[in-house]
Image (cartoon, rainbow, N blue to C red; front, side):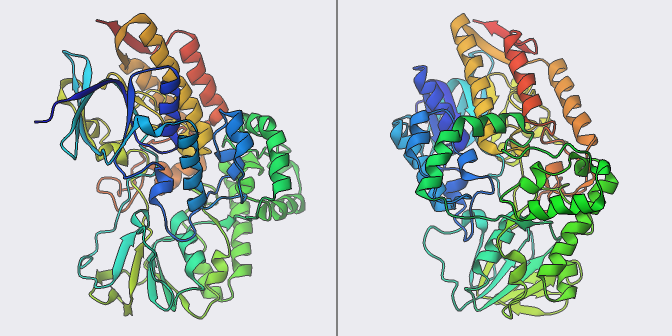
Length: 540
């Protein structure tokens, strides 16, 4: 057996959160290492190489805010930057601050076991290497556990097939080929719009439609980037006071205080405004008032009908099982126009389900579709999936999967009772799943780092949230969620995923805090300022 390598802190995951967390620890001269299962850093932006992959947050609100040098030096080339550029940015950050020497790649953590006697975590890697650490900080992502459907014959297909998360690094030949895309969520919508005019034939297999609105992307000139740099303080200040962590401030006139004509005028404007303005600058009532949401949904439905030439196809693309903004909103570029092309066909799986995958394509109950490539844009086991796939054993040998079987229970999404010295950046029931990700994780990393400074200064060797504090936070998460119309949705916001056993029965799993970033920041800041009343500490 390999000898264990010990560090005071181990960070898991070299994505957006892990990169910042190791930077903070290096600055404090903590004995820390970052373990990353992939061959290089980047997380989401390393793995998701599929055509059309890009930000749906404005680039300049997504980048890190903690270094003026970084803000001054980096030029975002598009309002919504593409995956290759995003990965280039994260590499630029790591190289600029010399962070790679604190990272170990190809270091996939298979299991973690808490040793109560020694008060350390013992980590076993797929490579056979072993590590121990006083503290473990996870930065393993919100959407990092891809899920595939379970159709018969999936291994029989003779062509190329892969989940979008595992898109090959080598170029995939699509021109002149028959391609099937399964899934019309955020990823599927990006892929479909990007490849529709490149493939010989595109068959879209849709299980459930999603609402989607225009991304309205555009280049960022040198002049505009220079102007953005002068506004960074203002930009991040605006992001700090909005629920979603964007610059978009809501319309507070009151939905029912303005006329239908005034509402439509606002929506017409927002429909052509970049990004999530249509969520953030809208009337807040669309999230909890059924009449307001119905009117908004009808407006978007009419927009879809106006863009898709075939009325029957348009109706299939309009959700009937949930209202606008009650699930994750994909943003698109010419997505609906793709269905006006002669080489694109939509298959409604609610009418003609898949029977099996064959050697030559996909067989539905109605017909066989001959294909050369199958793309599974079938989503993720959101928020908890990455933790479930790692065998994490806490006090008494209880696994985290067992504790979270019916849904996660955490303290601010940063810690969980029964698993001492385990700190989570972007954990379940934090605000990371419900807002602009980097704006959320900078707060999480800051809180974790402050806690580590506290325990190191006092010689504390064991930290764990109390069960009472965790229960109180869980109740807060539930209370906020149940006020929103999203409580009725069947999307990943409520922990639903038809491809994950146990997550496919419609049971709500409270995986994210929906009270907004400002309120969440108040909660976690007060916890630290008050000396961590919800946390139990012990020294050696």
